[in-house]
Image (cartoon, rainbow, N blue to C red; front, side):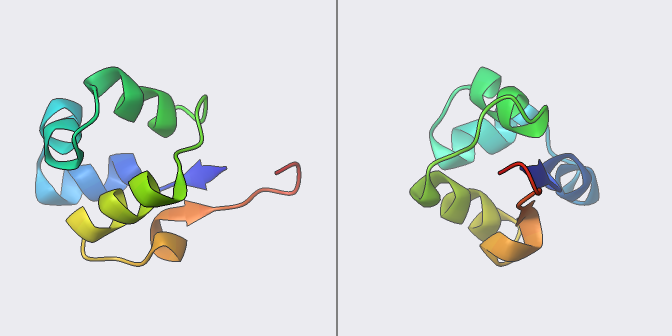
Amino acid sequence: MKNRIRIERAILNITQAELAERVQVSRQTINAIEAGKYSPTLALGMKIAAQFEKTVNEIFELEEED
């Protein structure tokens, strides 16, 4: 699953740790999601998207192998 988290964080000028705190997960979780090593639950995906005032579909994109 592709995502735009790193790009959206840069736009807001926030760190992985700051985003993690806002959505109540560890910084390592945000790092793993950004790296494509972990797919978030729907609830977490919605929380992340809400931080950027975007829809889930604007942040996350399924790839063919998903």
